[in-house]
Image 1 (cartoon, rainbow, N blue to C red):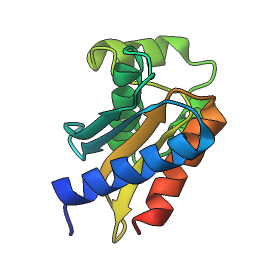
Image 2: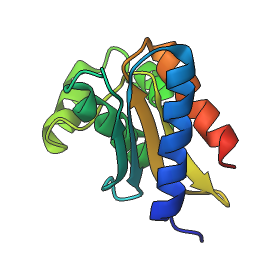
Image 3: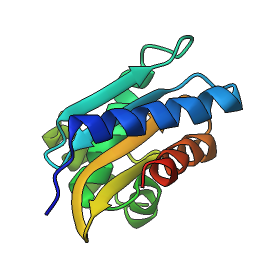
Length: 135
């Protein structure tokens, strides 16, 4: 199984920021490994500071479950007690906002990538563009 490298994580981050720049939306982009540890982070000029933790949380959630955060939001809808328990157990990192995708290599989740700063659809578009550019 291939592991997520710093070089690949930085390429993903850079590609995501290029797309966000083209959209005119300052974002924060985070890439984490399969354990949820931060590998690469970029906060674009003009992106709010709070977006850093949001992007890391989305990437962490996608890596932890191996599922896009938007799909998890649908799965956990109406299960507030369960999601609250997970948020407490992960010290607030568990995030169900759109814009986080797992990084999958040869059928195995090796990490997660997320963007935060636009609408959920914009965040997701930036992450998808990064994956397409770096595949």
